[in-house]
Image 1 (tube, one colour):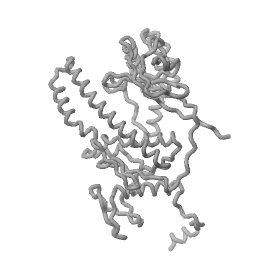
Image 2 (spheres, helix red, strand yellow):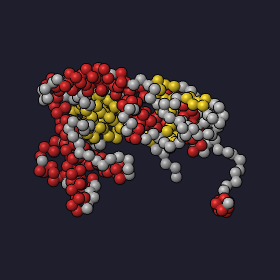
Image 3 (spheres, rainbow, N blue to C red):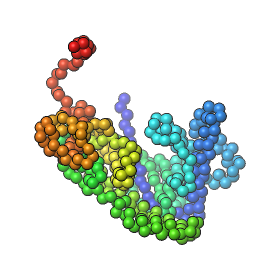
Image 4 (tube, helix red, strand yellow):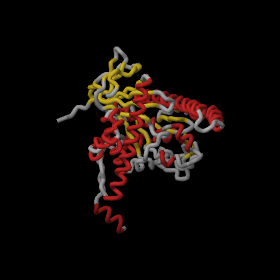
Length: 394
Protein backbone atom coordinates (compact mmCIF):
# COMPACT_ATOMS: atom_id res chain seq x y z
CA UNK A 1 0.00 0.00 0.00
CA UNK A 2 1.45 3.36 -1.04
CA UNK A 3 1.28 6.12 1.56
CA UNK A 4 0.55 9.72 0.58
CA UNK A 5 2.24 12.38 2.67
CA UNK A 6 1.13 16.00 3.04
CA UNK A 7 3.42 18.95 2.73
CA UNK A 8 4.23 20.88 5.91
CA UNK A 9 5.00 24.58 5.57
CA UNK A 10 5.97 27.20 8.13
CA UNK A 11 4.83 30.83 7.94
CA UNK A 12 6.65 33.40 10.02
CA UNK A 13 4.81 36.59 11.00
CA UNK A 14 5.59 39.66 13.08
CA UNK A 15 3.39 39.98 16.17
CA UNK A 16 2.74 43.02 18.37
CA UNK A 17 1.86 41.98 21.93
CA UNK A 18 0.60 44.51 24.44
CA UNK A 19 2.71 45.43 27.45
CA UNK A 20 1.06 42.83 29.67
CA UNK A 21 1.30 40.21 26.94
CA UNK A 22 4.99 40.99 26.47
CA UNK A 23 5.60 40.46 30.18
CA UNK A 24 3.83 37.09 30.10
CA UNK A 25 5.70 36.02 26.96
CA UNK A 26 9.01 36.94 28.59
CA UNK A 27 7.98 34.81 31.58
CA UNK A 28 7.36 31.91 29.19
CA UNK A 29 10.83 32.34 27.70
CA UNK A 30 12.44 32.47 31.14
CA UNK A 31 10.48 29.46 32.42
CA UNK A 32 11.43 27.38 29.36
CA UNK A 33 15.07 28.28 29.86
CA UNK A 34 14.86 27.43 33.58
CA UNK A 35 13.17 24.06 33.00
CA UNK A 36 15.77 23.17 30.37
CA UNK A 37 18.64 23.90 32.78
CA UNK A 38 17.00 22.08 35.70
CA UNK A 39 16.25 19.07 33.52
CA UNK A 40 19.81 18.96 32.20
CA UNK A 41 21.20 19.13 35.75
CA UNK A 42 18.82 16.35 36.85
CA UNK A 43 19.86 14.13 33.94
CA UNK A 44 23.57 14.68 34.61
CA UNK A 45 23.21 13.99 38.35
CA UNK A 46 21.10 10.86 37.80
CA UNK A 47 23.63 9.39 35.40
CA UNK A 48 26.70 10.27 37.50
CA UNK A 49 25.25 9.04 40.80
CA UNK A 50 23.17 6.03 39.75
CA UNK A 51 23.97 5.39 36.10
CA UNK A 52 20.30 6.05 35.19
CA UNK A 53 19.40 7.72 31.88
CA UNK A 54 16.29 9.85 32.30
CA UNK A 55 14.13 10.90 29.36
CA UNK A 56 11.45 13.54 28.79
CA UNK A 57 8.69 11.17 29.93
CA UNK A 58 10.39 10.61 33.30
CA UNK A 59 10.97 14.34 33.82
CA UNK A 60 7.51 15.47 32.66
CA UNK A 61 5.94 13.45 35.48
CA UNK A 62 7.96 15.54 37.93
CA UNK A 63 6.66 18.86 36.56
CA UNK A 64 3.51 18.62 38.70
CA UNK A 65 5.53 18.48 41.91
CA UNK A 66 7.73 21.32 40.70
CA UNK A 67 4.64 23.49 40.08
CA UNK A 68 3.40 22.84 43.60
CA UNK A 69 6.70 24.08 44.98
CA UNK A 70 6.90 27.06 42.60
CA UNK A 71 3.39 28.47 42.21
CA UNK A 72 4.41 31.03 39.57
CA UNK A 73 4.98 28.21 37.06
CA UNK A 74 1.20 27.79 36.86
CA UNK A 75 1.10 31.02 34.83
CA UNK A 76 3.09 29.25 32.12
CA UNK A 77 1.55 26.98 29.49
CA UNK A 78 2.36 23.44 30.64
CA UNK A 79 2.65 22.12 27.07
CA UNK A 80 5.42 24.63 26.38
CA UNK A 81 7.41 23.23 29.31
CA UNK A 82 6.90 19.64 28.14
CA UNK A 83 8.12 20.62 24.66
CA UNK A 84 11.34 21.88 26.25
CA UNK A 85 11.96 18.39 27.68
CA UNK A 86 11.27 16.80 24.29
CA UNK A 87 13.68 19.20 22.62
CA UNK A 88 16.30 18.15 25.14
CA UNK A 89 15.70 14.52 24.18
CA UNK A 90 16.44 15.48 20.58
CA UNK A 91 19.63 17.27 21.68
CA UNK A 92 20.87 14.11 23.40
CA UNK A 93 19.93 11.99 20.38
CA UNK A 94 21.96 14.28 18.11
CA UNK A 95 24.89 14.05 20.52
CA UNK A 96 24.89 10.25 20.67
CA UNK A 97 24.60 10.10 16.85
CA UNK A 98 27.66 12.42 16.56
CA UNK A 99 25.66 15.22 14.94
CA UNK A 100 26.12 17.78 17.73
CA UNK A 101 28.02 18.52 20.92
CA UNK A 102 26.85 17.58 24.40
CA UNK A 103 23.88 19.76 25.47
CA UNK A 104 24.90 22.88 27.37
CA UNK A 105 23.12 25.01 29.93
CA UNK A 106 21.26 28.00 28.48
CA UNK A 107 22.33 31.48 29.56
CA UNK A 108 20.17 34.60 29.55
CA UNK A 109 22.50 36.48 27.19
CA UNK A 110 23.15 33.78 24.57
CA UNK A 111 20.02 31.62 24.62
CA UNK A 112 17.29 32.14 22.04
CA UNK A 113 14.06 33.41 23.57
CA UNK A 114 11.40 31.03 22.30
CA UNK A 115 8.40 29.02 23.48
CA UNK A 116 6.35 26.41 21.62
CA UNK A 117 2.55 26.21 21.83
CA UNK A 118 1.45 22.85 20.37
CA UNK A 119 -2.23 23.06 21.37
CA UNK A 120 -5.16 25.49 21.70
CA UNK A 121 -4.10 27.86 18.94
CA UNK A 122 -6.10 29.69 16.31
CA UNK A 123 -5.34 32.32 13.70
CA UNK A 124 -8.22 34.76 13.20
CA UNK A 125 -7.39 36.33 9.83
CA UNK A 126 -10.28 38.78 9.63
CA UNK A 127 -9.28 40.33 12.98
CA UNK A 128 -5.50 39.86 12.54
CA UNK A 129 -5.27 38.07 15.88
CA UNK A 130 -3.36 34.99 17.03
CA UNK A 131 -4.85 33.03 19.92
CA UNK A 132 -2.60 30.67 21.87
CA UNK A 133 -2.73 29.12 25.34
CA UNK A 134 -2.70 31.75 28.11
CA UNK A 135 -3.36 34.42 25.45
CA UNK A 136 -6.99 33.75 24.54
CA UNK A 137 -7.72 37.47 24.08
CA UNK A 138 -5.45 37.29 21.04
CA UNK A 139 -2.15 38.86 20.03
CA UNK A 140 -2.05 41.35 17.16
CA UNK A 141 -0.37 39.78 14.11
CA UNK A 142 0.55 41.10 10.67
CA UNK A 143 -0.51 38.55 8.03
CA UNK A 144 1.41 39.32 4.83
CA UNK A 145 0.73 35.85 3.33
CA UNK A 146 -2.49 33.90 3.76
CA UNK A 147 -1.63 30.42 5.09
CA UNK A 148 -3.39 27.33 3.77
CA UNK A 149 -4.13 24.12 5.63
CA UNK A 150 -4.46 23.01 9.24
CA UNK A 151 -2.49 24.79 11.98
CA UNK A 152 -0.30 22.27 13.82
CA UNK A 153 1.75 24.34 16.29
CA UNK A 154 3.02 27.83 17.03
CA UNK A 155 6.51 28.91 18.11
CA UNK A 156 6.86 32.44 19.48
CA UNK A 157 10.34 34.00 19.46
CA UNK A 158 11.88 37.27 20.53
CA UNK A 159 14.83 38.73 18.65
CA UNK A 160 17.82 40.47 20.19
CA UNK A 161 16.28 43.77 19.11
CA UNK A 162 13.09 43.13 21.09
CA UNK A 163 10.85 42.16 18.16
CA UNK A 164 8.35 39.31 18.56
CA UNK A 165 7.64 36.76 15.84
CA UNK A 166 5.32 33.77 15.51
CA UNK A 167 6.22 30.76 13.36
CA UNK A 168 3.08 28.84 12.38
CA UNK A 169 3.44 25.26 11.13
CA UNK A 170 0.66 24.22 8.74
CA UNK A 171 -0.30 20.87 7.31
CA UNK A 172 -1.21 22.10 3.82
CA UNK A 173 -3.12 18.93 2.91
CA UNK A 174 -1.36 18.96 -0.47
CA UNK A 175 0.28 15.71 -1.48
CA UNK A 176 4.06 15.70 -1.83
CA UNK A 177 4.71 16.19 -5.58
CA UNK A 178 6.06 13.29 -7.57
CA UNK A 179 9.83 13.45 -7.92
CA UNK A 180 10.97 14.29 -11.45
CA UNK A 181 13.30 11.98 -13.36
CA UNK A 182 17.02 12.60 -13.11
CA UNK A 183 18.38 13.67 -16.48
CA UNK A 184 21.70 15.16 -17.47
CA UNK A 185 20.10 18.00 -19.44
CA UNK A 186 17.96 19.23 -16.53
CA UNK A 187 20.66 18.87 -13.85
CA UNK A 188 23.10 21.41 -12.50
CA UNK A 189 26.19 21.20 -10.34
CA UNK A 190 26.56 23.90 -7.68
CA UNK A 191 29.95 24.79 -6.21
CA UNK A 192 30.06 27.18 -3.25
CA UNK A 193 32.85 29.72 -2.95
CA UNK A 194 33.95 32.97 -1.33
CA UNK A 195 34.81 35.34 -4.20
CA UNK A 196 31.81 34.02 -6.10
CA UNK A 197 29.11 32.71 -3.79
CA UNK A 198 27.74 30.17 -6.30
CA UNK A 199 29.35 28.72 -9.41
CA UNK A 200 27.04 26.66 -11.64
CA UNK A 201 28.11 23.89 -14.00
CA UNK A 202 26.59 25.83 -16.92
CA UNK A 203 29.24 28.53 -16.39
CA UNK A 204 27.21 31.10 -14.43
CA UNK A 205 28.92 32.77 -11.47
CA UNK A 206 26.98 34.68 -8.80
CA UNK A 207 29.02 37.30 -6.99
CA UNK A 208 29.32 37.09 -3.20
CA UNK A 209 27.94 40.22 -1.51
CA UNK A 210 29.81 39.74 1.81
CA UNK A 211 27.16 41.50 3.85
CA UNK A 212 29.05 41.31 7.16
CA UNK A 213 32.28 42.66 5.67
CA UNK A 214 30.45 45.60 4.09
CA UNK A 215 29.07 46.58 7.52
CA UNK A 216 32.31 46.09 9.46
CA UNK A 217 33.21 49.79 9.44
CA UNK A 218 29.84 50.76 10.94
CA UNK A 219 30.06 47.95 13.51
CA UNK A 220 33.56 49.06 14.53
CA UNK A 221 32.29 52.59 15.27
CA UNK A 222 29.37 51.30 17.33
CA UNK A 223 31.55 48.85 19.26
CA UNK A 224 34.09 51.56 20.11
CA UNK A 225 31.23 53.66 21.48
CA UNK A 226 30.03 50.66 23.47
CA UNK A 227 33.46 50.24 25.09
CA UNK A 228 33.18 53.75 26.54
CA UNK A 229 29.80 53.18 28.19
CA UNK A 230 29.54 52.27 31.87
CA UNK A 231 28.55 48.65 32.46
CA UNK A 232 24.98 48.33 33.66
CA UNK A 233 23.97 51.81 32.49
CA UNK A 234 20.97 52.62 30.31
CA UNK A 235 23.23 54.14 27.66
CA UNK A 236 25.20 50.89 27.42
CA UNK A 237 21.99 48.91 26.97
CA UNK A 238 20.90 51.35 24.25
CA UNK A 239 24.25 50.98 22.48
CA UNK A 240 23.97 47.17 22.61
CA UNK A 241 20.57 47.49 20.97
CA UNK A 242 22.04 49.60 18.14
CA UNK A 243 24.68 46.91 17.46
CA UNK A 244 22.01 44.20 17.53
CA UNK A 245 19.98 46.12 14.93
CA UNK A 246 22.96 46.24 12.56
CA UNK A 247 23.49 42.48 12.94
CA UNK A 248 19.78 41.87 12.39
CA UNK A 249 19.95 43.92 9.17
CA UNK A 250 22.92 41.82 7.99
CA UNK A 251 21.03 38.59 8.68
CA UNK A 252 17.97 39.86 6.81
CA UNK A 253 20.10 40.90 3.81
CA UNK A 254 21.76 37.49 3.67
CA UNK A 255 18.49 35.56 3.96
CA UNK A 256 16.80 37.68 1.30
CA UNK A 257 19.68 37.11 -1.14
CA UNK A 258 19.85 33.35 -0.48
CA UNK A 259 16.08 32.85 -0.68
CA UNK A 260 15.87 34.54 -4.08
CA UNK A 261 18.91 32.69 -5.42
CA UNK A 262 17.85 29.24 -4.13
CA UNK A 263 14.33 29.69 -5.52
CA UNK A 264 15.65 30.63 -8.97
CA UNK A 265 17.97 27.60 -9.09
CA UNK A 266 15.28 25.15 -7.97
CA UNK A 267 12.76 26.58 -10.46
CA UNK A 268 15.24 26.36 -13.36
CA UNK A 269 16.56 22.81 -12.83
CA UNK A 270 15.01 19.44 -11.95
CA UNK A 271 18.13 18.10 -10.20
CA UNK A 272 20.50 20.12 -8.03
CA UNK A 273 23.88 18.56 -7.17
CA UNK A 274 25.98 19.93 -4.31
CA UNK A 275 28.94 18.96 -2.17
CA UNK A 276 28.63 17.88 1.47
CA UNK A 277 31.10 20.35 2.98
CA UNK A 278 32.58 19.98 6.47
CA UNK A 279 32.09 23.62 7.42
CA UNK A 280 32.95 23.06 11.09
CA UNK A 281 36.44 21.95 10.03
CA UNK A 282 36.82 24.65 7.40
CA UNK A 283 36.26 27.50 9.87
CA UNK A 284 39.29 26.26 11.85
CA UNK A 285 41.35 28.11 9.24
CA UNK A 286 41.43 31.48 10.98
CA UNK A 287 42.33 33.30 7.77
CA UNK A 288 39.06 32.23 6.14
CA UNK A 289 36.77 31.66 9.14
CA UNK A 290 35.15 35.09 8.97
CA UNK A 291 34.47 34.90 5.23
CA UNK A 292 33.10 31.35 5.48
CA UNK A 293 30.78 32.29 8.34
CA UNK A 294 29.60 35.37 6.43
CA UNK A 295 28.78 33.20 3.39
CA UNK A 296 26.45 30.93 5.44
CA UNK A 297 26.83 27.94 3.12
CA UNK A 298 24.93 25.55 5.37
CA UNK A 299 21.89 27.84 5.47
CA UNK A 300 21.88 28.08 1.67
CA UNK A 301 22.22 24.30 1.28
CA UNK A 302 19.25 23.75 3.59
CA UNK A 303 17.17 26.20 1.54
CA UNK A 304 17.96 24.31 -1.66
CA UNK A 305 17.15 21.01 0.02
CA UNK A 306 13.69 21.82 1.39
CA UNK A 307 12.65 23.74 -1.73
CA UNK A 308 13.52 20.68 -3.82
CA UNK A 309 11.17 18.71 -1.56
CA UNK A 310 8.43 21.32 -2.05
CA UNK A 311 8.53 21.27 -5.84
CA UNK A 312 9.33 17.61 -6.50
CA UNK A 313 12.93 18.25 -7.55
CA UNK A 314 15.97 16.05 -6.87
CA UNK A 315 18.66 17.09 -4.38
CA UNK A 316 21.90 15.11 -4.68
CA UNK A 317 25.04 15.47 -2.56
CA UNK A 318 28.50 14.03 -3.08
CA UNK A 319 31.09 13.18 -0.44
CA UNK A 320 33.40 15.90 0.83
CA UNK A 321 36.52 13.93 -0.22
CA UNK A 322 35.66 13.70 -3.92
CA UNK A 323 38.39 15.44 -6.04
CA UNK A 324 35.94 17.91 -7.57
CA UNK A 325 38.53 20.68 -8.15
CA UNK A 326 41.45 18.38 -8.95
CA UNK A 327 40.10 15.95 -11.56
CA UNK A 328 40.45 16.86 -15.22
CA UNK A 329 37.82 15.91 -17.78
CA UNK A 330 40.25 13.27 -19.04
CA UNK A 331 40.27 11.60 -15.62
CA UNK A 332 43.72 12.71 -14.43
CA UNK A 333 43.84 14.02 -10.85
CA UNK A 334 46.15 16.95 -10.04
CA UNK A 335 47.43 16.13 -6.55
CA UNK A 336 49.60 19.24 -6.40
CA UNK A 337 46.73 21.73 -6.75
CA UNK A 338 46.70 24.35 -3.99
CA UNK A 339 43.97 26.72 -2.82
CA UNK A 340 45.67 29.71 -4.45
CA UNK A 341 45.57 28.09 -7.92
CA UNK A 342 42.41 29.42 -9.55
CA UNK A 343 43.34 27.98 -12.95
CA UNK A 344 45.45 24.97 -13.85
CA UNK A 345 46.54 23.10 -16.96
CA UNK A 346 46.35 19.32 -17.20
CA UNK A 347 49.76 17.74 -17.93
CA UNK A 348 48.07 14.84 -19.74
CA UNK A 349 45.67 16.50 -22.20
CA UNK A 350 46.88 20.11 -22.01
CA UNK A 351 43.42 21.58 -21.26
CA UNK A 352 43.35 24.69 -19.04
CA UNK A 353 40.58 24.66 -16.42
CA UNK A 354 38.83 27.33 -14.40
CA UNK A 355 39.01 25.71 -10.98
CA UNK A 356 35.49 26.70 -9.86
CA UNK A 357 33.64 25.78 -13.06
CA UNK A 358 35.54 22.49 -13.20
CA UNK A 359 34.47 21.77 -9.61
CA UNK A 360 30.81 22.48 -10.42
CA UNK A 361 30.92 20.15 -13.43
CA UNK A 362 32.66 17.41 -11.47
CA UNK A 363 30.10 17.74 -8.66
CA UNK A 364 27.37 17.17 -11.23
CA UNK A 365 29.30 14.24 -12.76
CA UNK A 366 29.91 12.50 -9.42
CA UNK A 367 26.32 13.05 -8.24
CA UNK A 368 24.75 11.69 -11.43
CA UNK A 369 27.14 8.76 -11.44
CA UNK A 370 26.21 7.89 -7.86
CA UNK A 371 22.52 8.18 -8.79
CA UNK A 372 22.97 5.65 -11.61
CA UNK A 373 23.11 8.16 -14.45
CA UNK A 374 25.86 8.23 -17.03
CA UNK A 375 26.83 4.62 -16.38
CA UNK A 376 27.54 2.25 -19.29
CA UNK A 377 24.36 0.66 -20.63
CA UNK A 378 25.98 -2.39 -22.25
CA UNK A 379 26.55 -5.61 -20.31
CA UNK A 380 29.80 -5.50 -18.37
CA UNK A 381 31.60 -8.58 -17.09
CA UNK A 382 31.78 -8.31 -13.31
CA UNK A 383 34.97 -9.23 -11.43
CA UNK A 384 35.09 -12.63 -9.67
CA UNK A 385 36.79 -14.00 -6.58
CA UNK A 386 38.88 -16.37 -8.72
CA UNK A 387 40.16 -13.53 -10.86
CA UNK A 388 41.00 -11.44 -7.79
CA UNK A 389 42.98 -14.36 -6.30
CA UNK A 390 44.92 -14.82 -9.56
CA UNK A 391 45.82 -11.13 -9.59
CA UNK A 392 47.08 -11.37 -6.02
CA UNK A 393 49.25 -14.41 -6.81
CA UNK A 394 50.68 -12.89 -9.97
